[in-house]
Length: 150
Image 1: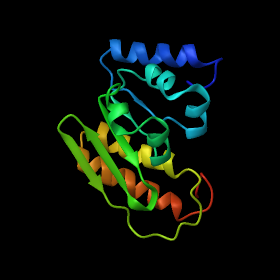
Image 2: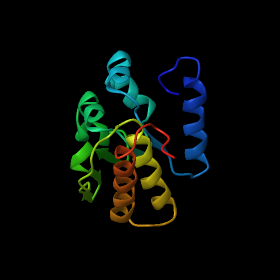
Image 3: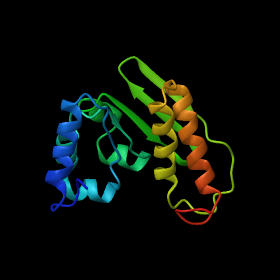
């Protein structure tokens, strides 16, 4: 939504209103290629003040690393494929290893991870449990073909 010029204003306004209402905000950067196209500084200005950024390891690199991201967002949960995930913020550094699965198709793994993590987090689970929930969902998606396994 933020990378499309036609929907960017609506996305930024949605984030602004959510913060104004005291709601939690999270953004998945989507693609290192899109970050490169728009520029890391531009993207980070769009997500400034977001509670949780959800990049994969390539997006972390495209954004200049964890330290650069944390200058704009409260916390970061980065995924590292078969190596699991890490949740970092002020006084926070949690990691979760991924189980060994046969990687049949990585399509949708990041979205599945986000769904598992955010659903656990919004239910009130602690960071470590939410992180494990995200890793479990992403790993399950990797073991099936397609973004929408049956």
